[in-house]
Image 1: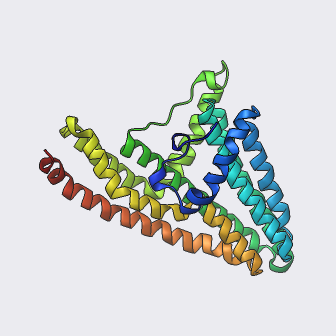
Image 2: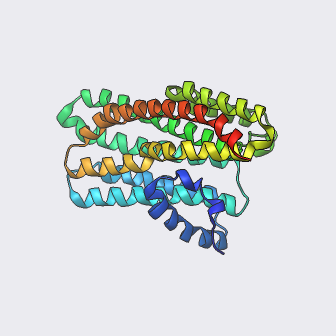
Length: 298
């Protein structure tokens, strides 16, 4: 059994290291997991275990073998994180619980690593490191949520794909599960993605208007959207978890993990604002040329 692009994420906006390293490794693993009847949730939990062990390794960041171990364990987590979704789509075993578990695995992995580095730095830095790590964690969460909201908006507008809504069947008979998942989804993908809320709303309005004015030209309009915004979304991939992983490793090897936290607060936040500004420029170009494109195409 082989995996195909249909069980992977949207290819044209995928991050470089995912496309050439993480997802090919996950793709090789997924057929074996399917053959062994391993559940996607078990894969997510294995990834979470790797993330927790990465935290243990990075607690000893002053020793290079531990840094290498922490980096390798986080790469393993990335592979598991890619494999669980591919496996769920391949075996048609997607569930909203699995989606929540996958998201928790991501969050808890970085929580483990951040906590370990804070504990390791505390004897030398003191209480200041607690505030620094908390602010960096908040900035990281907002950046990650905004990136995920951008990806979901692209899938919806470029390909007409809509994220399925939680159902009672996904959590059993009680109403609490779907309500809780909906609350978490609104908090993460809507509430915490507030930096890009305005531009995403304007892009959605522009697309809705174009599709309403030209109902027979949907394929052309969506193709034009992909042509304009796919390059922008590839730049957004610098806010993917992969680059946080690389940053942690580099700063740990250089014995300055506090620099990583400062860069998360200042560098990645600055990048986020720059990306939003670029997206507004692309939106203006898209709106300005769309009508001419539709009229010129026979």
